Length: 287
Length: 239
Ligand SMILES: Nc1ncnc2c1ncn2[C@@H]1O[C@H](COP(=O)(O)OP(=O)(O)OP(=O)(O)O)[C@@H](O)[C@H]1O
Ligand SMILES: [Mg+2]
Image (cartoon, rainbow over all chains, first blue to last red; front, side, top):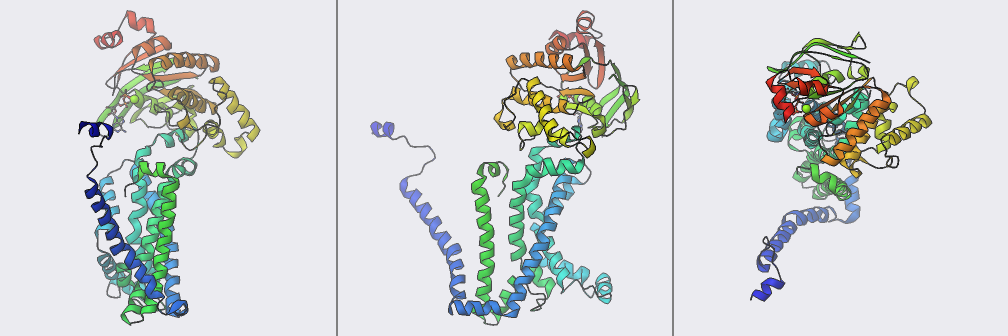
């Protein structure tokens, strides 16, 4: 008995083999059943009438308009939120000011408010029934049920991603390197581009990827604000829902498959980053 | 260049980091700011560098009022306690940073930058490390690179915040000697912060003893040893 204990030391954290296999098996079954299978189903459904059916679905003007809308929104919202996120993180970590704690809470607001509520807020603020909304519509600048509304909703929902990724990194960096650059004669901008930005680049990229995934996938807030006008304000997620409700299941699932592939692409990029810069990310990541 | 500090005070909110202090630093001197933790040494040094601005009082560089000058305009070579080297740049690029940051018409050519950086690397006796990154250096090497980077801008004065604080006793002794030599060679007015009385006494021409935001005594090391101005100075320098 004691021989075995001596020749095969057992790490204190290890479980009996049976428990280990049960746990691993459970995790595998769970992932297959709840993550992998549904994803496969989406692709299977999209291809139910073969590639031709799927391609036909992609040729539908409504589907194309939705894809264009989603890509445009993401292309505008992500850079804006990257810039805002950097600015907010910069303000929070490099300066001391009153109301800092409040600002940090405010950044998290979109995470805690239900997207539908966020959409309703925008409708109340800019809709035809509000003074501001009425004036905007009278002056031919409608926000609700139009492109600006969708953009605002997406901006609101995806605001925290970049800021949340880079704040911890900037906190950890402190101000010393920036101060060193300033004493060496660098201007504020030069300091930002040559010192601050290189130091946060991985966290920033990571935040941008997450922000992009959510910007393309957002449903609730956009559904409320856009009015889901096909060919005009429908985005990919809202268009998918409309196709589905009309029993156009091949069209719905084809569009869903495209959206899923865009998301998978984002995930792939993220994994690639993590794999290549594992050490850097390990020190900074929060997720 | 001589530095005059006139009735300089600093408050952080309600906290008084510096009571009005006055001090006259002769040109070319090597000065130690000596005092226990929280006595206001770093605060005074950062005000000199322009990284912090005083609540009241004036700073004069070479007889000219410098109180309102920005950190860039002051051209003070500053060595940070943890060195604050740029992690993502090579040693060469770290040292060249201040030269590259100059306005175009004042910026040296690439060849000239290369010459100056190499000369500084020789000055700190690390001629071979230009291509390395800061995390590939020992603590003592990092400290010397930080010094070279500060010297690269041809500063008007040299300010060092606990330059040897994070190093072991043997390296500290060597680098002390190195700082003395560099000071003597460049003739720069140099102020360094320390809470190690032995270091201050051995290295400095003039020691400024600080406590709780006040200057307790200013004098040559021997004077301070022989005639401590207060019980605090006696106790602190005896340690
Ligand atoms: N940014 C700041 N905000 C608020 N208080 C500060 C700030 N910087 C310094 N202080 C306060 O000012 C006082 C002097 O601090 P300072 O850093 O100058 O001390 P020090 O002599 O350098 O100490 P140490 O040897 O520990 O570095 C301390 O009481 C400190 O808490
Ligand atoms: Mg200090």
